[in-house]
Image (cartoon, rainbow, N blue to C red; front, side, top):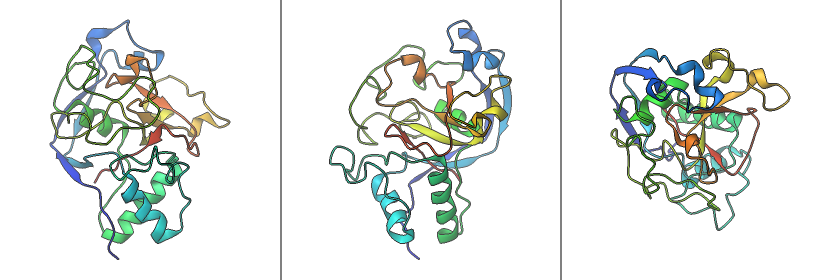
Length: 232
């Protein structure tokens, strides 16, 4: 079966110091466990250059009969160069499984560490992928009404787009497994909540753009500021 595969970018092996220790005191509660930096040895992997787009997800819907996302037929949201939105963690896992079976490649959601490592783009110890100062020309955020095209803003040092800004994106890990004592609180069964990374076009607080920031929500949440990308 021929499918539309995402464009992938190679991320080299290296060492990730999670969080941003030198900015202690400025963070949300979620980030305090990472002030001292957790060192993670990262193997090389590939990550989708963009968040999964409407044509890529539409291919999945048409070939499997999966639920049509809430905004896929909305003219403000359904351009071919926009990311698909309204995708739950369960939807994104189903998409990855379908891609695995169709291509024989080990597609899955990024882990929490893979997301942060790829988002850094080779930078170390900075708030944002491009440095320490907020630059509105580098990311989509701030009360916009819909996501912008996936190539609207410059890529980071690894050639990956919109790892901060654009959409909140699902990670593979559960929040309770990676947040070192910070307890999830959203939804009826918060212990089952996966991690979200990246902030979105609707968020107005620039702290949500910090590379180290993570969020959590129920795995069945479908919201127009939530999407995903994949890794191999």
